[in-house]
Amino acid sequence: MSVDAATVRRIAHLARIAVAEEEVEHLRGEINAILAFVEQLSEVDVHGVEPMTSVTPMKMKRRPDRVTAGGDPDSVLRNAPAREGNFFVVPKVVE
Amino acid sequence: MADELTSLTIAQARIGLAKKDFTASELADAHLAAMERARALNAYVLETPERASAMARAADARIAKGAAGPLEGIPLAVKDLFATENVRTTASSRILGNFSPAYESSVTENLWRDGAVLLGKTNCDEFAMGSSNETSAFGPVVSPWRRKGKNTPLVPGGSSGGSAAAVAAHLALGAIGTDTGGSIRQPASFTGIVGMKPTYGRCSRWGIVAFASSLDQAGPFARTVRDSAILLRSMAGYDPKDATSVDTPVPDYEAAVGKSIRGMRIGIPKEYRIEGMPEEIERLWQQGGEWLKAAGAELVEVSLPHTRYALPAYYIVAPAEASSNLARYDGVRYGLRAPGKDVIGMYEKTRAEGFGSEVRRRIMIGTYVLSAGYYDAYYLRAQKVRTLIKQDFDNCFRTGIHAMLTPATPSAAFGIGEKGTADPIEMYLNDVFTVTVNMAGLPGISVPAGLDAQGLPLGLQLIGRPFGEESLLALGQVIEKAAGIFSPKTWW
Image 1: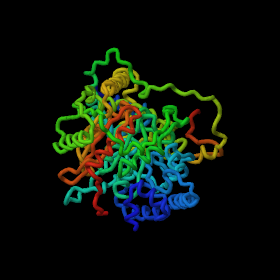
Image 2 (image 1 turned 120 degrees about the vertical axis):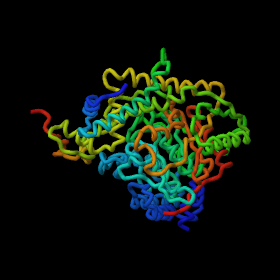
Image 3 (image 1 turned 90 degrees about the horizontal axis):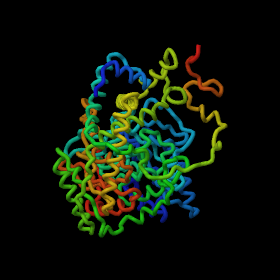
């Protein structure tokens, strides 16, 4: 499979990465080179094979559902690029 | 004196500190001075001299009280992928900017608990995506090694290139890194040191900047196998904060170093004999087998039929997980923010400016293979192939194979800018021998085994059964004993 320019733009938008029009062709080439490389997987017979979901056979541990941290807005917000009081500031989302 | 201090192994430094031949402060100062002289290598992205001095003084106080931990006063370098409390952590990406974590990663916390001293944070490929350290936002690391009679700057390998270079150039007694597809073992091989990727789940991933969560694992870099064992013992252990960390006791890894390997069955996987592999590597591989045989191991040719599919499957699974993990970098809570006309525009501009080209490419590949209509064809199929890769190993281990011996890399270190600029696949092929181990969640170690005709180090890889780290250390020590220890000549 290979992608066209419209697909490159669509993937970029899904990934939330701005792509300039002059980058599209170059990206298309790179993505297609990688897709061509992974194409060899189609020759593997995977009939009846379970997809891997956990590489080590282990039972997931359970823990009590309780609050173990929090109540410290300053350490949560200390790296914020923009804050107001105890809030992160973002561009207007709702008109 | 200072040069002597930076040339010690961790095991030797431990004895010297206990005998009060020198103090932890002197040891830290000697390294800080060496780091200053070696800035041309660009191994560290942040030196932490004040913290190092304070930690060394505290170590000296504990030694004086007779309360020394297993790593007391040992100065280490930490890949800038581990969150360190109040110490800038960037994953070598612009998007994290001056991110200062409010918490400490579990693995580094374990090192400080045992008395280790932080020298600084080391350079790496951006978000650990690379095999040469050239994708770092801080620029490439220059290997301390050079080809005989040449001064072409070489790569130290990647992604943990700074950690590897720091240990090889005597800018730390040991270092820690992470390995998602070979990011510890390949740079260890390129710089002539020992690098180990433990079994998936052996070390906690909590507080490590995530790349591909089902593959990422922390591990040590050191100049000897014994030193790797010492570091791993402190790093490993169950952590309730990482649901994939394994709750089994941590063995005394050091006790395995020097143990007899008599009667061990070592698999030589025939699929690792790839086309175009330099003859020197082929010869070294055979030599490694001879060393193990001479020490009493039995060599058995084995087959891992799905080996050639590991790399393509990896380039679906890893980008897919990365595209999900890296969704968090949105310019809202930390790091870089680029203004946009609305919130989506802000996300898109921030991520376009903050991520380098390799990271952008992998996020886009990952987004594509997970997108509606393509998930089954790519991601699901790759996860099935992954099952087959693991089954190949399981089948061999079931026949009584204790470990496998393979080359660590298909070539020695290459020059900065030499590979992957025209075709990304060329760079990806570096990990052809190491990536299978991550796909199967197994432990692997790269041990220096010789120098090529150009005078550059080459490593051999040992692959173990799940939680077979002790066998790898015993076997690795046999190779080390036969091959010797390799150090670059100082030119910087």
